[in-house]
Image (cartoon, rainbow, N blue to C red):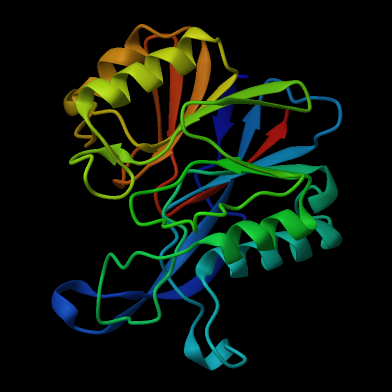
Length: 264
């Protein structure tokens, strides 16, 4: 699968609240939903939604009781957009999540960790399937999210509608902490995923592209630069330029973004 075109302007925007810096309280931000064109999709799919790092909440004035996580709001609004014909319908849309979908209710604290299952479930109820990875702030319960149309990957390959999708959860760091791998372990998992020739690779952490000012991990860059053709979806750090070419792979950074992939 190759991404041929990425729109410069969003087709839809969602207001949300996020924790501001230095415990200054909530700040209002906008999640942009952007359309991208790919060269092909499986016959049973009309679109794939790719998103990650949605650690915000719906604004209090629009909440009915406890504010929902931004990912839950996106799932509902995408479904409504599909019913209006603005995007393909949810039953023929797959969803790829690149991690950090948990949103804590304390908007005076950034980087809260917790169970993101409600977000995954919100997508699974309406969309064809949901696949992705855990971010470093996603603490799934021991009975991890599992259903007939949900796949959480960490070194595995899932085949969905003829698409081969591989993923590595977490980040490079102290393996004594949740969702962290040593450099050696992370590299081994990612190399093994790439060796099995997936169409799409899903990561939480991004590669580093220093010549373009794009932050990430050089180790991931080294592995992906040797990989076969694939589309890599990732996040964890925000890139001003969301799509770059790295060797034979295309890297799509969706930190704080939502991109809907459609056929030409």
